[in-house]
Length: 258
Image 1 (cartoon, rainbow, N blue to C red):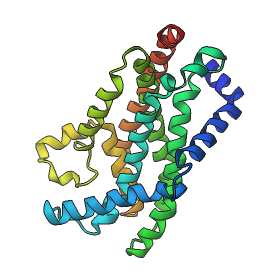
Image 2: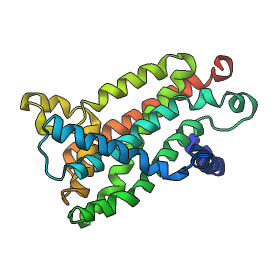
Image 3: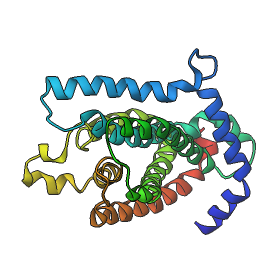
Image 4: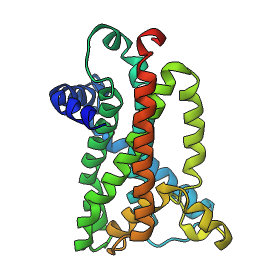
């Protein structure tokens, strides 16, 4: 793994170039261009803010911000996985013609969505201030929480991108899994909506502690739940290691399968 990290560092300019190209091409030719980075989550926020508080009677103070600070990292997470899943297959010509660390392909997808999420903070911070939320020093925990989520997303991205080359139905299955995953993660509703007997099982979902940690530092101005966050960090590291070895194992037959 350390050799691979060193190799990625040696090809860092290629990685940066791929991320820049993806960011430029994602909205190339569209009228709003890069503004779609903000429009898409804002539209989701508007829909969820109407449906859940008023139709489903979710009673939560400052619900739009309660939702917003959780929805954006979730979009980063799911977009990273879905884009990375098809990254190797979508670059078949590149993979079969020249040598470079193949791991750069799913990594660039995750990094691209990471940049989109960071850009979205341009909206989050002013929105929190406008709605009367006081930002505190606990925002300093943001890089740590984001790193844990990044490692978790990258681990899954590595595994799924490799599996998709061999099993072409993987992308469809992953889409269904992510759809279900959304509703067992407290994004559009608080954890208290679940019965206490279920909450301990819901907490086994590593994204729960990550989402709750973002809410703690942005919305509630408090430290994250470190015991829960450590659990998510350990799962993220384990996922990254497993994803790395799955990718390296399947990488041997990429040329044949593509």
